Amino acid sequence: MTEIYLSAVIPAPIGEVWKVVGDYAHIFEWHPVVEKTVMKEGPAADEVGSMRHCTLADGTQILERQTARSDDEYYYGYTITDDSPMPMTNHEATVRLREITDGDRTLMEWHTRLDPDPGAEEEMPAMMRQALWAGFESVKARFDSGG
Image (tube, rainbow, N blue to C red):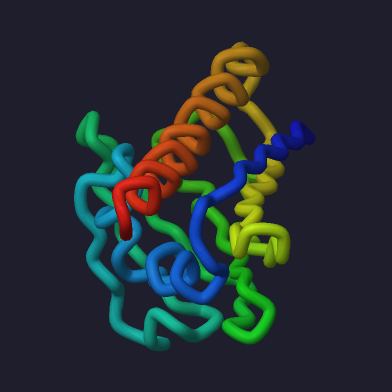
């Protein structure tokens, strides 16, 4: 299993960042790799078990299921289903925010685990790191410009 951990300091209070990042149904509004999301019937977007169908900027279609969530502790977990066209299986990820009291900033963390398909052991983790980092950069820019 490959593990990827990235973090970034967001120049805004945790509650403001969570309003954006914690909105499971609207990742497309802040993540440049995700062009569109459609919530599937079932649990609401703020509930464990909710599923979002994502269309990525390159046209790739993936289905993600929310596996954990705490609005009080500012995190959610999700998995990309194994029928994804991406060359991987057993994907698990957690997006977590932590308060930085010095300067009223937020630490945003993204921890991902996955099993790359044979032949994609270098490509898939690199692609995932690039996608996650694009999300961080977008959130940072959103708050650098005043929210």
